[in-house]
Image 1 (cartoon, one colour):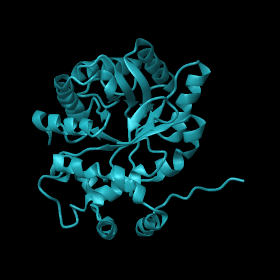
Image 2 (cartoon, rainbow, N blue to C red):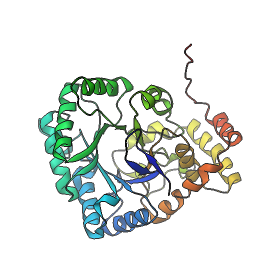
Image 3 (tube, helix red, strand yellow):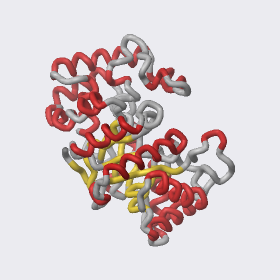
Length: 330
């Protein structure tokens, strides 16, 4: 396994990591979670991603049970949670969601209990909160930092302007600003990582823990002939994602990418993940495998991304036709 620093921080993350969104509790039970996390750890993966809202807190409970049973040295792995949506879903009461100081601190305490650990390595603001002053968020995160309950804090699906506002507030008061952002990044979703965040990589040393490298499974090719019964698109509540991704235009591009993967002797999933890893501004790519065979396959991307030479990358660009244009300033 290869490792990269989280932006300009001193923390090192494996280039591939493992997350539990949509899978733990719904598709992955305790036995399978133990198997998947154990295999990931044995392969050198050191970052495990979670959130308060995943499966209404059950995802964190499940991951916490596995970590307790494994008895890995706490310093050998990196663990995260996210705060914003709450864990009660539609039953959230006031102050049980959002980024108020109250919810940030209480949600952190609850996450620590569910995960059965003393601290979180990474703590993300899962979305921006227009109802809460950014200064309140920065101070709340620094309160947790000072208490040793979190080691780094960051954002997920924030804009570059919102991240910079938090950074400027932190600098004004001598506080610690956001270290990392967790954006979606894959062959179909590139704007933030490749264009919007470019000024932040150098100016504030932003790191990225990217998610959905396979575009919710679209970039595995398994939807080319319809929706399998065991896929996440067959689960309730994913109609919006299915309508967004499973378009005839997307399917045609996936089929063309499949031919490139076949020529390279790898699966389409490996090609898609390797493409994400090749971006030097990606600190880690979060995998969401729900089967051991998927995880075994996906990890091959660590070796294959070195084979993505310029000619092959241009073939991919010709198919996708969506490379962000970054204006040159003189």
